[in-house]
Length: 311
Image 1 (cartoon, rainbow, N blue to C red):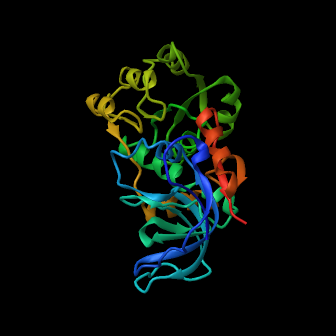
Image 2 (image 1 turned 135 degrees about the horizontal axis):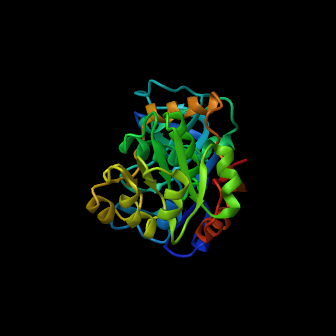
Image 3 (image 1 turned 90 degrees about the vertical axis):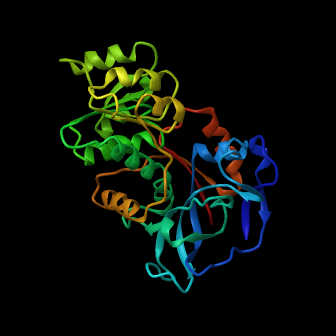
């Protein structure tokens, strides 16, 4: 099979198209013919070697944790899928090697869900990691009916889904930080935009009126946004971050490193099929242009998701 893989860590050009053996189909695994693979910030961090202290890494290393595609074969212990089924998955394991930037992916059954029927494979591939991250963050802070929720970096891959999922969970108001060029986009998603940067707490307080406090917050930016968050909350424990675990845990908040969850992924797919969740794909690239997708993502300011497609 063709796959985008690396044998050393570094700049985007370490990713190259390689011809590798087809993956094995273990007893509880599903062989997926890839139609699209989502591109996430963790992908370029792995490519640069930043996660080597957290997971064993083996080369040749195929990048990617998000996939959408069609089931080709299943192991004998698999009960939820059969050949021909359309699936999506957040295919993360406890070591890093066999990713999703490939024509074929052997995925543990527990990492997959049925693809939402109302969207194509490209848009579906943008859902798993980002959608699960957003949902697990919001559930960690008990986002619920009537809450005012703040989403830092609300126009990005996770953020734009967090805005919509917060509304689906019943939030009364969702405040989203973004650059001014993305404010209208956030309004379309149901958020009230504020510009990030110095003076953010004051801008949020002015927008809210009253005591100027929010009920819950999810942080996808780190830095000043994270350190300022507790002072903006009525209850300083109701915030979560994907950045800087020492800081957020020291503040009494929650650090979230997304985990595969079939039930949650099916729930998110249901939101899509009911028209309550939109996955924004800014741009798609053919599989062999994975390096270009990494370059664009590392530059920052991507609205929504980038996706690789497999013909």
